[in-house]
Length: 358
Image (tube, rainbow, N blue to C red; front, side):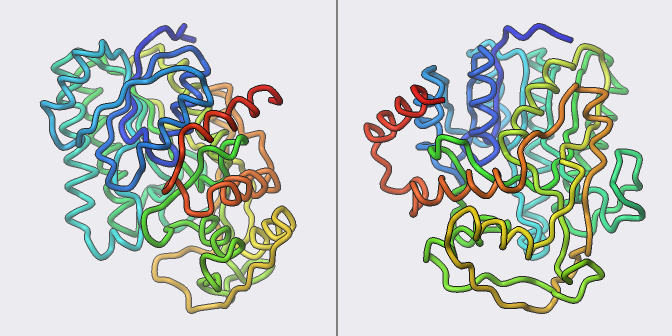
């Protein structure tokens, strides 16, 4: 296991997962520089991260498709490792705009690793996705499962994974971790940092929370005739704080050259209706819903086999679905309109209260 005393570049660090990864890194004593184009994020998240951790981070407003901007950050900030989270991530949108996804995700990653090679920074943790598996051949999904993504978003993730493997074959100085996420939900326990999508949410829990707080009238559930206990789809939901800690564990265990590919999930499946009922219990609010036809490409059941993450990283998820819903509701209740209209002074005061009682 490597001892960490380095400057980490987090691409997409102002986003939902990125902001929680920054908290994990700062709390572990690492220095952080965030590179984000703010196309689907808000810089206020980073102000709150610094308030929670009581440590500063650096920020660069730039796009991963701009190689020179990345190279400048790597050299000027003395970066020693990169956690790459930047990219487009909506499955449905990727079907409508596939070329945009290939340009942002694949080309952007090519520019990033090219800049890293020039700067001789060869430690990388990449944000991949369970969508690379496609329709499950068996369950739970382990890292040896066949790879056959069913949408352009998943295909960009698989193409990047293959590109990074080829990079390692060509140069044995690289240390790379591909982390295949399942379904991140929840928020930081302080309620200061959470998921704030620009426009309609792409994930289940933000929709549920927005209905619970009154921003939306009804939750749409896509399909109720799957071969599952209640007819709705089953997914592996993982607390975003657990997911963030997985990145820190990956950095610590990248001691040998090559590619390490790991699932980050709980190993448990929860149906859409189970999530709704659990959120209603956590919030004390009703979540009206209506069923719609299945969406093309959706699968009935998908959940991880997390065994290898335990063996390779010494990491496993610890937070329950109940805690995921409770933390997400706390975030939504304290931030009914997300980060918009945030007043930093109030945030700092609440973060002091959180630290006193943590």
